[in-house]
Image (cartoon, rainbow, N blue to C red):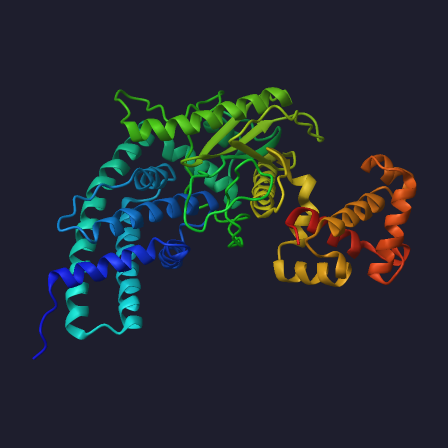
Length: 466
């Protein structure tokens, strides 16, 4: 008959497991796996900002739970990131049952992960049973504590939204973005924003926390912009299911201010401060554009969607309007309900380019600046194949190749004028001629014989890197 392992042995194994999971990229893999299970079974979580809040919540939960596995008692404290995620779901108009479903799916995914770990290590049956019992007890405590605390957070946020008629306005914006048939006069009156005017959509967010995290990194030259280089999951140009709105008629939205009495707790105030910062950035942007009206929509704990009334088709944004850590992606000015939707989709696409880029594209980026590389990069594999075919040995990561690519792109943009390229690059025209000669030697063909595909490949490398 097998002897049950001692509690000391189980705790020792747990301590080793926790240390390994917190080391290197193991925590990133765990968080990615848990989130993938949740996203697969909860299709409502479609857009980038909700996924960003979910990842932040999952990571914070994982750190807290792992830290308690080796303790005899577990006084579990629900992390602030989880409260922020619950408030986001409430603002977007989702039902409380969605929040509960997410946590039960997360519990199942966590137990499945730990079971797989034990199977891989082929632990003795009695040892495995004791370890699983301990894990089940801790996960049950975790889920009960989380659900109780976050239900209160969700209900408080939901009540604020209801008092401010949040749901009705949310449905209007969601219907507009989903392409439903909406009476524009009625919608304009309820939103306090005229839809039949020319408007420009903006997506406004803050840089992710650059603090040390396993597997996190920053892009070169991006002032601490720590967005992860992940392939987009295709939700940026669709999936507008349940967004929140805090817009007072005729004025920019007053984010986080309940219509009735009551005081914020510290967690609500922290999120509100972040959104107020974004609101101020939108106001400065609108003033720079001479906008006659602004509509803003909270899209997450640190993100806003906005529409600004404008007159001109060409938009020029002064470089000092937006400061770190705020970033803005702009659509293309358009009119009416269809334009309201299309400009927003364009802004989301521009943001996708920003977050996939290997270089800093600035604090404010317009879709018109990156439309070509967005379309070319929609299929990353095909784009990389194009770059390889067109650039050959120029598609390498060294300073000389980068200088030659820069020269060639300037030369093509200046209609194959050595003088124009020289002026743009700040070099002598003979230097441009020499570099073009060297480029032709490396490409094995004359630049004059190359077509649009060469320039497109250069544009993609300039943004996405090699």
